[in-house]
Length: 218
Length: 242
Image 1 (cartoon, rainbow over the protein chains, first blue to last red):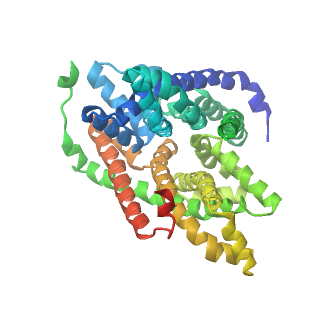
Image 2 (image 1 turned 90 degrees about the vertical axis):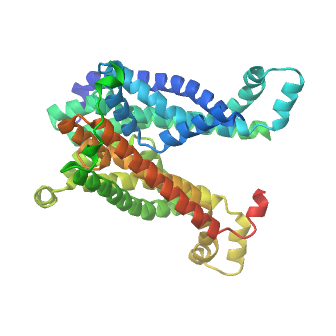
Image 3 (image 1 turned 135 degrees about the horizontal axis):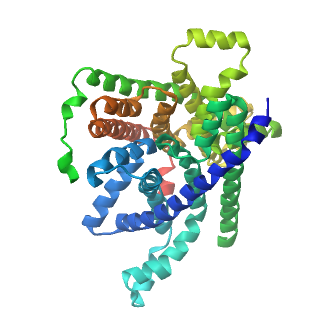
């Protein structure tokens, strides 16, 4: 074990964490937004909303994320005539992919709300969107928060896949340092430790929320 | 502009030598996933059981395993097994490894995917075991069964059926995660699709083929498992759900 390799390259490697967090936060925000729309479409009684959304969700849940990245990589030059900026390519493929997972979490959350709630909302004259915005979603969001936090942790881990398109996020930088210094054991243990700290903090939050939720509802 | 620039050439999927490469890629994906799944099942079920045993140190050890493997990205684990793990071996074993195991990346992929999936299976298995009413345990112990007999004859038959749906999902996750082994050079289907693009510029067609492989195999597995699920209902459990 030679920890000096970590100390000497600490700034360079931790600098990649900024990009990792950027990727994760943008993906979570975009994925959540698209996921809500998809979940609502999947719960809709209109076939032209239900079938495309269902197809979308099954399609992306059936593919590895890395393949979705390649889809964008091969498709975007054909559609736009030029290759996409790497950061944009990563963000778009992450959002498109994770939205399918968010959609299923949100759908489960919405379906955990009693039908009486939406009946009461419609009876008091709210429109579909008002009902969703003011009655269903606030309650459903509460129920699904633990699962959403868990998914956020998964996304944080998934950002490491930006590695394949050459983005210099945390893991790519660790890899670059290893290519120069050839100290794989120390460097990958260090990378694992850094991810572990952030992810177990996320897992802890999810666990706490779950406990609090159970306490409140009883 | 637009699609006009691109002429599809689907013959890339079967003409020599690419057709054979794609088939080999599909076989490698399935081979790697199944071997990893075998490791994951053995390890995952053992750790899942450890996490519900009465002994506190054993429960703690199981929990440490699950936390470590679940809270680090699979890609980091893959790089660890591929780049770092051989360096931890004694010098003589390292030399043997580099001389005799030509496809070390494949085996690193199997170990990484197997140990990672095991941590996820352990959690599913644990919650399956915890879903079984404590009365079952009490009844089994009170009739004089030992801990092992209780698990073997009373708990396991229940747990097995409860975990079929989550295990199906986990198998598909394991199958899809095998694509990441391309980063260490395993020539599975995703890597093959990407690789053929570098000779032919027809990555779109090969990526389509790779996607269809994943989607078709997933659909087939889901269908097969739902048949098994229908064949093996737990007596008295359906009525409760209805």
